[in-house]
Length: 333
Image 1 (spheres, rainbow, N blue to C red):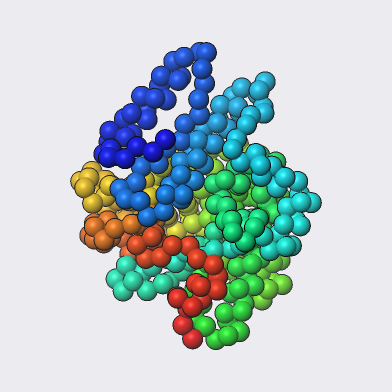
Image 2 (cartoon, rainbow, N blue to C red):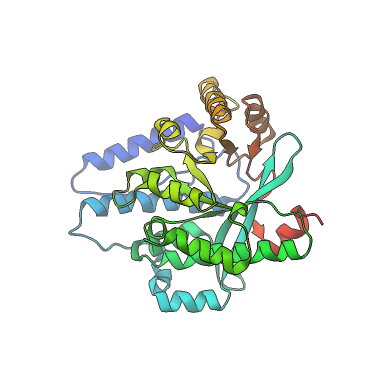
């Protein structure tokens, strides 16, 4: 459902009311995901994000109702990717493509880093966003193949840039719960870096803050081990409903990524600005680099600058692009 012409507060209020009505009705269940945007640069991306949130809502329901553990989803046509053999063949056929999005230094708007993002291209004329296939693969654990494929690709590309004499900077890679829970996770990262001839200092491992709630993961111990191996650790999605300030005092990490849900209204909401400014100040005192995600307008950029944010990422500076295009646009000899 696309609802044009609604202010963010009204949109979110109606969404909450809709969810409440379904919760109150024992005969009818619905999973709901939503995404509000001030302007439409990429409608497919916005729909994909809302769809991914809907799928998360659906997973939460089925985790608490295990008697019904199968359900339909419009991406069921991609279920073949849950087969590790099929997935490996799709990777071998180069049907998974790594995109890179720049991280920008706010004072001079120069690229100082990048985030690696995965896309699936089953046909030359089709590009599938991760929200449409990663949740399905997470359910079966097959997503780890994608995680390590992206990591290996980034290492090999960093090595190529160095050999070409290009100025390289750190690249961050996201890892799923399945991968992070593997007993030899850090050892696998180190082995890939060693075989590629890349220093761990050039790799940033992104961990979602909500993983602190996962019972089988000791996030604090994992972060200590990752940093002990020489990698940087970034806490992603800070500012979502799961995030809390206790994280800043309980775990040592290197980068905090401020979620776009807070960036969205920072220009118009004094309370949001005050919170962002306080978090930026705390990060400065603790030696944590803070990155604001999802910046789409100059107005947001100006407000974040005033709050003390010095690193940024978003469509205002550049959309995710394939590695070749990224090299041409952002890397210098």
